Length: 477
Ligand code: ADP
Image (cartoon, rainbow, N blue to C red; front, side, top):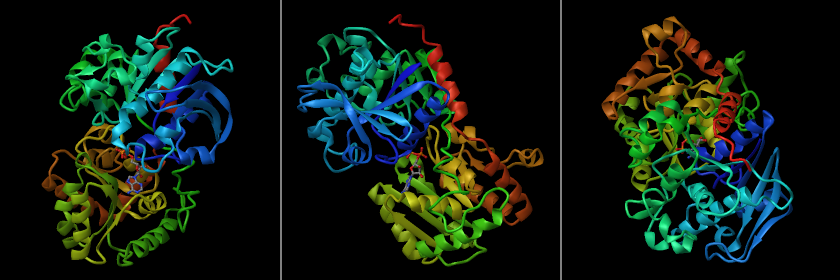
């Protein structure tokens, strides 16, 4: 089977969150099962510089008013790529979603290029049977396929985060190459605007999202305005959990760690904690329970609940290290908390991949208090690295962490801590439970071992995506 992913991020070249990680691992995992998955991404400078360009698949005099464009054939290790080379749109500094003035046209160009490959092929005889778009930047892929000419590949749309929807003024319709008749509820229209994600969810043959619980939540209160559409399409909506790329996230061979370790050598974990404490300016205290959070600072991530608990943690003798960037108020509040509690609370404002690896290898508890969490990766990385996740019971967090309780301790299934209400008190109560277990080292190690042994590999999810593709009736082309 031939499948083309269309996406705006690809680790290690361009990543703002979990999407980049998933786009690096999932297509390779599906390829390992024998399907020919390739990926179309913008030719960002970092990507162009790193991969080998092999030829030109298509040229366009203009795409979406961004001037001349080409689709280049390229190769990342283990993953054939198509790069949308359109210098006016993509060859510039900054993150993928900066420059709001042409954001809609930029990702419309990407979606158009994806639809072109789906209908016409790459000029070298390769044409995908399935076009698989990821998140709002690829939301118009199913629209260009549905409203265009020529053979119609199957289309799949995956929601990695429904909070980001790509909503733009209806006045852009003709700039995006969309005919007037598409601006309806059956097409791309969303409350009088153009909705990129909405269009994808309406028009794709199948929809998936990244956990079974999130698939349910987004049909109810958590759909950010799309719950009705998704409830209507519930038979076409799948929830498939993300996995962990064990090549990148593996404490036994992680080059970022001062001491590598595994299930059989847990004692080798300890030097990483001292190293991390030193780097972060925390007291090098081997006995203090170390709580950490690695997160975008966004209201949906619930880090304000952690702020509510800073003094509580310190009063109980714990340390807190936060790595994050985003909301400036939250950044300031964490900086102030660190000033109030020097040596006990530390914060790194910014994005640092290596430091994130070190945090997971050092922490006793990784906090993930999200208000909403489609799948979440940091609770999985925490488990792989022997830290116990403490999560709010929502979305993928509910599906991937088994909360400590008398029952789950007795049957050996516990892997972390859960709490329910999205408030600081409920998190504080869960912190108390975590600290109580911390003072019972034998039971703590049992829970830690269970998490480290958990199989969050990509093979199962990759098989589930192949099953999903197989449910789409053949288009006969
Ligand atoms: P989301 O995609 O909503 O941001 P996920 O949990 O799915 O959340 O993925 C977050 C990814 O970003 C993880 O790989 C995590 O380690 C990484 N990350 C988040 N914040 C930082 C940071 N400040 N420094 C380094 N990595 C970070």
